[in-house]
Amino acid sequence: MRLALLAALALAGCATTPASPDFSGDYSRTHVVRMFNGDPDAEMMDTLEIGPTKDGRAIFSINMMFDNAHMCSLQEQSAAVTPAGLVFRVADPDEGGPFTLAINITGQVAKLRVLEGTGLHFCGARGSWFGEKEFRKGARGASD
Image (cartoon, rainbow, N blue to C red):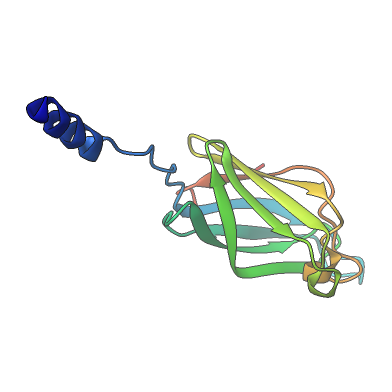
């Protein structure tokens, strides 16, 4: 009986909880930005950097320029890691909430999509998170 109890405790000690996926890496995308001030249209590169997963969370940064040449930046934000990617949520209205951004990751592709709010707090009045933005890992300047 005592041996069975020790064996059960040893097996329980070996059991591990499933680790969160690690989506760390540098992702990017290129796209044409329309300049409405008379300058020629320009090709720009947006970047998404994701740090390693720790305790079910990951630090990420996004730098994007929207089609109207307005910039958006989220620097060193903490997001929950899920099996499908990252979820960044801000609830406090003073901090830009409610705002929820999903970063769904499959293989080498990360797709950003707003689930709630506008994200204008991070981008200014003319920045636009509308639509899905697709980034590719490791391919600096991968085109949409």
